[in-house]
Length: 224
Image: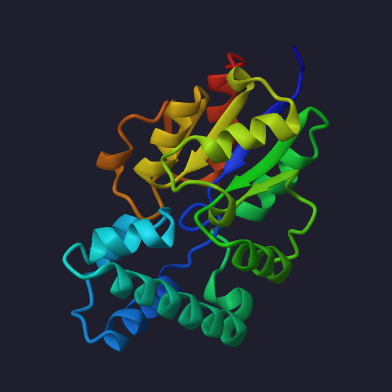
């Protein structure tokens, strides 16, 4: 059994606040198909799911071809906003960078990402914030079933060689928590993201800021 520990981070709503670009891109996609734009809370509710699954949830009564068009329209709009806004469109939450630096300084700590973003989207985000090389494993929607399927976490465990009992997922949605539970790892819900606290009730721990992350990890791993 390895002494390594693994902290897997969700991205949107956990590390970065991309709500404005997500809502704007979804609005563009729906209007382009002459559909009523879903309420903001509904859009926030599907963050973390892969786009095809998200569009089915947001527009369950339209044909499959329209779902495909919504996905492509969203991707084009989001890419344009990413080029236009850069890091400003998805700013890091307060304390996020310091927390990543603290954890990364521990030689026994590995960091990873499990996100509903595409590979192109994640790579662009990491570059814009100077986070290349911080994460030893990066799992994206291109390569896995949508959350809450545990595939992303299982891939992180394989790539790092860390045991499930030594791994934690940190995320802002119930999809992250359900994914972690399905994979048999620990779960930390963050309350500053896109799902309300009530939807994070199954998490092992809840935190209200990155300054609480270290103590939550210590508690989970029996050091507090």
